[in-house]
Image 1: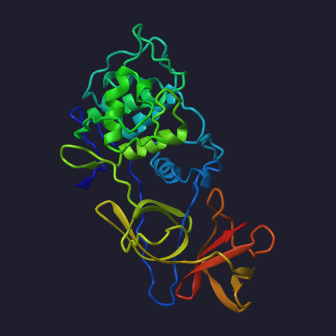
Image 2: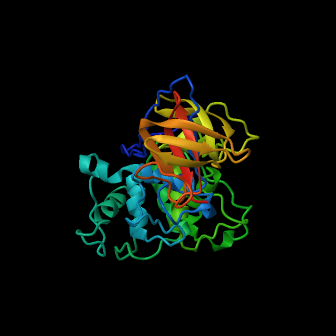
Length: 363
């Protein structure tokens, strides 16, 4: 099986989710470099550790430009998503508008309730051309209505049907609310459950409930990370795939080369061998380190105090030293500072005896 990064459709429909990464060149002398593995969103204040089941997916799609917040670092993960917004994000993930613009598929008109000057009109028109959005009998799309979970699954399954992947249906006997699924949605839901794109909650699929923005992100992430098994495309949850922050740079879908299922990959961890090969980023991670030191900073020099024995050590700041606040959202701060006021603790990432990155926390 190979991880499907581009899904090329019979109509040349393509997944456009891609994350740009940089390869780090690490020095070998006096080097103790650390990466931060967040338990919350790197980008959005309101995607907290409460959304442990979705924050990695949300951030990956945010980096890829598939999903966007409100412009003030808010995503509203628990809010319902409209049918228009769902189609826009589906379009960004699978590139329907791009194919329509290329002339490889003909437009089939639009819906009477989708004016041409709206932000979603192009995406909806493309979805209609592909047969993803069919609308009502009187040619309405109902763009401002909230998207139900079953309709979201129908739209997503129709999109995947235009690709080279096969998603056969299966039975839904393991769910207690199967009788609530509309007949038009049953096959789509069954196929996505079989492909592990949908898993339900507490033995229920909740087909008529509104799909939330966080749920939408998880659906799209899994749909764009299917493994092609020949006759049945499947999403495989992988513990060795993580999102990683190193200084001000974030990396998505990073494969841990020395993965150990008995370890918890979270927080500050020492790393080596960050590299990219064939579009995949790999990293080697070792022990965790608490962000538990205090520091005085002045004139380009750090004086660190270790909590276990109050011992001190002094390190100079590298010329391009990066200071980062790991709290919500993870972000670079203007310059290194002493702890005690805004920041309580810190820990340095050291290259050749100089602080290359210093991680701060307010907790």
